[in-house]
Amino acid sequence: MKESLREALFNIVGPALRDRYAWDLFAGTGILAIESFSRGAAGAVAIERDRRFAAAIKRNTQMLGLGPEQVDVHNGDTFRFAPRRMAEVAEAYPTTPWVVYLCPPYVMWLEHPEPLFELLQTTAGLAPLGSLLVVEADKFFDITSLPLGPWDVRPKGNMTLAFMETTG
Image 1: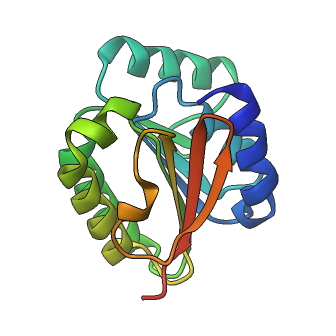
Image 2 (image 1 turned 90 degrees about the horizontal axis):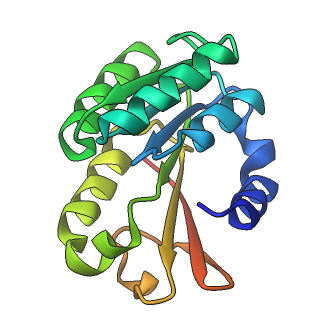
């Protein structure tokens, strides 16, 4: 996520982060998990498939003095790992709302939207009432095709952010 888009994102969700659990799916650098925790999230999970990126996120969290109880970093397939971990967290903290960032590589929205849609639906089903789902896509993806909804769509240059609160 570009810095300007991340700034816009945190201007929108910043106040909603306090005491929520943050999920950085397709974490890349893990910046969304780390920044969410620094802005008051109760904890964060970063899931990244690429071993090198996951290792870098772990190193960065350690350099910042953050342990797994603050930012829990996992190397694995988001589609497989996220639902299992989310079910565990939902069971342990059933009333703590989440902020879930779904920011995969843009090409996934165009080439493989079905697994992403399924992940969104699974996440919405597991997330406690009042959780916030955040989707990032580029201008080539038809954001109106997202399941669930209604989505609050915010175009930002060549990218789009979409937000939806879970209603249970």
